[in-house]
Image (tube, rainbow, N blue to C red):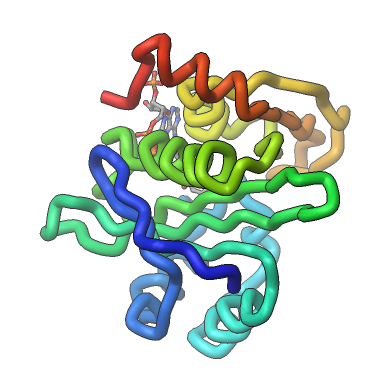
Length: 189
Ligand SMILES: CC(C)(COP(=O)(O)OP(=O)(O)OC[C@H]1O[C@@H](n2cnc3c(N)ncnc32)[C@H](O)[C@@H]1OP(=O)(O)O)[C@@H](O)C(=O)NCCC(=O)NCCS
């Protein structure tokens, strides 16, 4: 994995994923139908070995994998966020999972997302961050919107979700757009 410092957000911090984050709690998120309902992980079962192997897939790569740690110590490790870098084009594709139900709808997803975007675009000087989600993942669409991302296109009827054809929404955020967005004062609650 590419080296990063611990990244501080408003409500949480992003720690480079390490052995202490590999837990039954994390495996439980991936096997929870509610958590993975709108994620491609819904098609798979997970265990500690598969999670360890996923974390190891970042070793020696240019990509990032962070644990999201809530400032509220009662919550602690609430999810993970990854960034796959395309170094030739200086872009990164980001994905997130807030696995703890108790943390949902409290601004952690948006804060973690903005923290990763700030690091990738403003510190690493990448040009652009991209992300994709099912069009019916209202939480993820809100996180994208609240982070200043713009919808760039749709893959029509791309996914089969609970027996229904659903579009995939592709979104992007350019470095200068994030800078302007942050200056506008729009921040997570
Ligand atoms: C999507 C996800 C990251 C949102 O995280 P979160 O911490 O709940 O997000 P926030 O608290 O920052 O909420 C952002 C907005 O989404 C809304 N929201 C969150 N979950 C929602 C849901 N299930 N349905 C509708 N809106 C939702 C919040 O109310 C908030 O709305 P606002 O902009 O009007 O204030 C989180 O629910 C998650 O990880 N889900 C499971 C995995 C997943 O789907 N990952 C994305 C795969 S592409």
